[in-house]
Image (cartoon, rainbow, N blue to C red):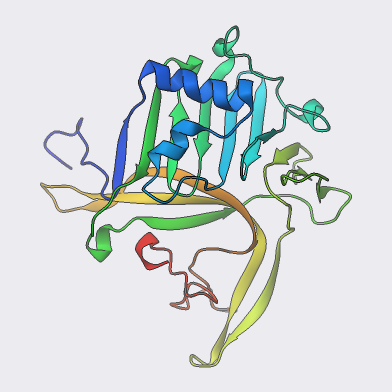
Length: 262
């Protein structure tokens, strides 16, 4: 551990900083009042990333609001036909006390508003080359839901939104077109073995690493959400059927899990 344990090393490859109060106001207004894409998130990404898809995950004291904004306007869970499965709409003028955390995120940046929306932070990819062992790593996590249209289904509408029933029996509204989990054997002729190729609905995350200047230890120092997607697992590793060993390949597109290698 570092001598100054209360000051962890900065994450490599990430710019993280506070939002000014007017920035917090703009985020709340864009997402919950105007219902249009978050301008602050557009401005946070590297050049050329403006207009990328945006997603919303708002944890409130009385439930959750999710949403998707692939282009100009949000489709949120607090509107029909999913309002009964969602927290009520959030009015930033009167009920910020309901906010536990609000995440507005896209492939290249994330905005986080803390409890009560009293403060906000923005995190984005930072330019510059890094050694392989410090490059950010992309990961993907399976979103659970029973397979079959009776329990998990995509709703009609131009912007993807789905309703799923989880194994616990709870229902959730996800800002994505739903794909149930399945797996198939993908042969690796060059290795003489097979890998399990997974298909499903995924939450994607980018991990940023840091190196302790005193000990040289390397570990995950920060992470942010990057998207919600459906289809073949977007990041590695893959595992050999039978042994569970990593195959050394991240999948059909050689997605090995490091952001710099995609």
